[in-house]
Length: 216
Image (cartoon, rainbow, N blue to C red):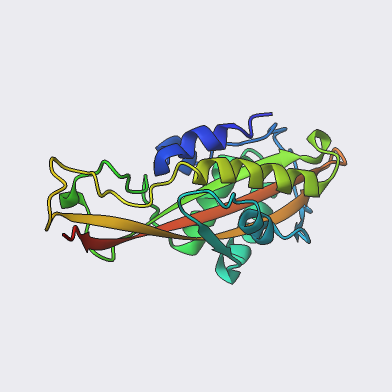
């Protein structure tokens, strides 16, 4: 299993381009579902798992919510990929989802060592990723959901709360930024011709920068 890969790619609040393009964090069995794809929105609450799975001592909290647009886009993307042999990969499904949502995701979240000149007050940056695995790798669907929540928590633990120490000085009047985070998440399942089930979770995280001034 490669679920730990999501944490290493997301640490420090910087998401690599390769992940945004759709790295699979599970054993990708290729799906090989041609035609008659049965895709079902999951009954497991990935949103609840991601929210409840965050440690209280994390510097920041990412509040995840359900999003109808994301739910619809992911379902359509998995259906389309399953009906087009060769396209049923996590990378393709993420690309289809992004296209259906009309998104232009950022390559990375702002980090605390970014120079102020790269940030603006109220600036939002949104990254997106996908996690997928087969039912043959987990006892239950809930086990997979909980594994994803644990890895997301490890990643969030490395997110930046501010960039107060960015630049060369920390004097009174120095401008810096604090960061707040929100997210969305959706999950669907797809029945495979082999008889197994494939799980797909797509998440987004939006970071908002707020300009602050060091006070005496």
